[in-house]
Image 1: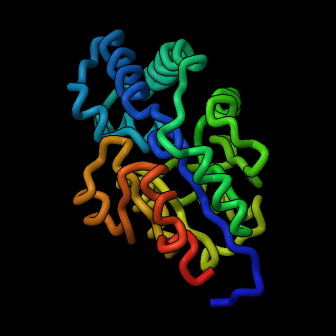
Image 2 (image 1 turned 90 degrees about the vertical axis):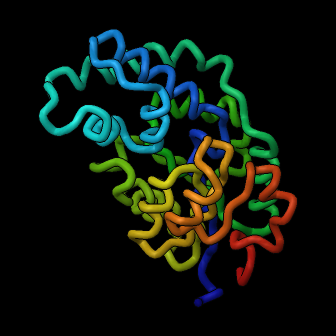
Length: 225
């Protein structure tokens, strides 16, 4: 591994740095209920981490009325926006980003949230002073588990895949990173179990950002950098 090129950490945001996984679950559940397409909440939760297009495909199948997808997305977005002023960072989230920056790592928020939603996420996280690059849904043709948003994050930050680690909370995050041979560190704070994340290929699993921060210098984020 070359050590004369910049190193960095790509972070998923929803469910990884901010406590939003179950908010998205409730909002998609309600959007589906409003359109007479009820799906059990536990099933919805298992799909969070995918983009809206793949989430609806996963939940409703390829034979669904695709003309209704836009209305479902709009309903979800309207419901979710009601929470924007109450979004809460997960324990240690901002401190973890700052600790990475202090160690010379570029901090990249690799999110596929929409541009206006990203603004709310950044305000809640309150760590813009150490964030190098932020992506949005406009930067990716396909959502996770496709790796498009990670490709965009690398291109925009000037980082190489062999010099980064991705931190995420879902099996979809692990799958996306794996397609680029990027090591993925999993966090269980989004509601996915340690066994599921490890089984999907996560190189290490921690409870939340605070737990990762506590052993940062012995973690894959800094080891060998």
